Length: 399
Image (tube, rainbow, N blue to C red; front, side, top):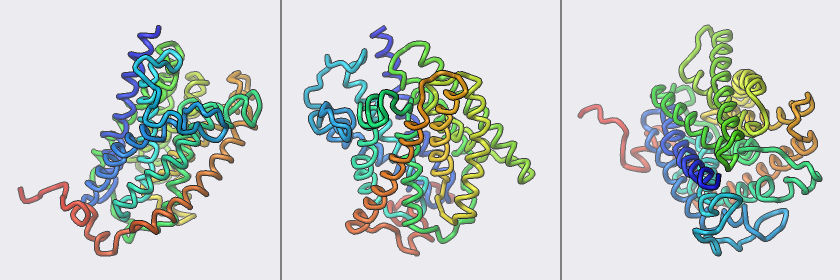
């Protein structure tokens, strides 16, 4: 099966990169004003490039190095030192495992983009994303997936945290970081402008849905029945959450929207991510059904009650979804589904990673803001970031 495993993870790596480029870029780009769409595409594209280099230089070693510590993996594998085409990680060439994990290191800081669109300085985006990936994301990867303090044999004993594809590692960290950045950045001057292109949003969401098969199915790191089950439950949760989001919209507002139904898709995908290797179709149906309503209400709460302009609902969809899915692993174990999860490890890991993410993100924002401008000026924001920061615009209505 070694050759089959390698072939599948080659495909999965391409699928996860496809989630960011162009999936997430189009999904976010369609949700903003027409005068800001290129800035969103630029943010996603540039983050993908920068994170790739930083993952090679330091991130992979911090996350999966051989230092043996519970906190980080050290710098023994910086720039892939000692890794050759013949080096193995399990049944996979280690360089392929590096590439697969690199796509996760790309999409996680890219998810945060949705919290600060339409008002942030481009230089800050690059500096913040670089620091955040190295200081927050990479150590958390080590704690959960790299044999660190939250994994089996760590601070929770023999039964460590269960996070199959990133409910904690990806979605909780990105969601909470988004909330911190949104609070510190402040609200947009005009929060009432509707999405400029719902069609882009739907196309981007569809690409994310397809790419998520590599995200979750690839996390099995093998071409076997476990990967097939992870792929299947991912699809079931996404489909169910799409419908419950739309139904809840119709009950509350009288109509269901295209943007709503595809946002429900992403909520279902985020929620099943940590559990996708531990549950079956019925559990996925339950997770998706609840996620479509839970994440929608979380978005209303953040915007309405907390008055936080997390512009594209990153925390409500990804943060809440990832946290919910992580807790559901323990609940299903309690109900007899037998995935070996511990309430102490699941909830304890959420608290530890959550506190670390909030504190570290706050510090990173403050440090980065001392080095480069944080927010654009009022004139730039009103005019739109595309022309002001990149001297381009998306649509030439005179051509």
